[in-house]
Length: 171
Ligand SMILES: [Zn+2]
Image (tube, rainbow, N blue to C red; front, side):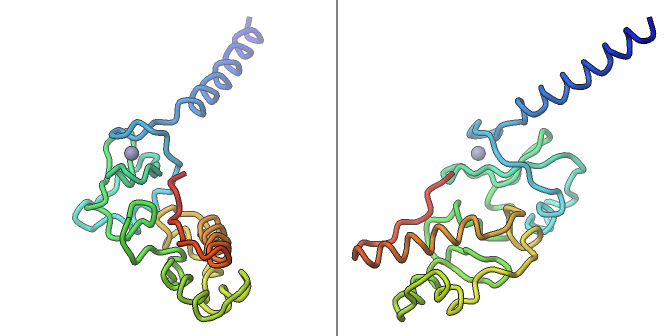
């Protein structure tokens, strides 16, 4: 009898975890599923006027046309309540690529315009990447290389083809 109830308990725990993964909450405004972010990241970027930041799991809305930056099951923070420029929510320059070293898309395009021909040369010229504080400086709370490396490659390709550089599409 005890054995049977243990089995039942372990099944229901597993079941709960599976349900949690499948149903992590969507953005309350655009209804798209976001990415989990650490609460420490939210604290770093939220304006002091919206503190304290609740002790609940937070997510970032990646939809470029949605006003929500962070949300939880308790509420959300819009662009106006976040002090950091979030690249994929901005249409106008400056659009930050590397928050630790404060390098923007415009800096990358400028470096290429001055003769940087490879990803390595752009990194050398701009100082982009390698800051190591992304959890706190980047509103994503993640390494910025997932955004700046594709952007540099696209910018180099665009110059070869003499096309204008497209901004990073929303994920
Ligand atoms: Zn949204």
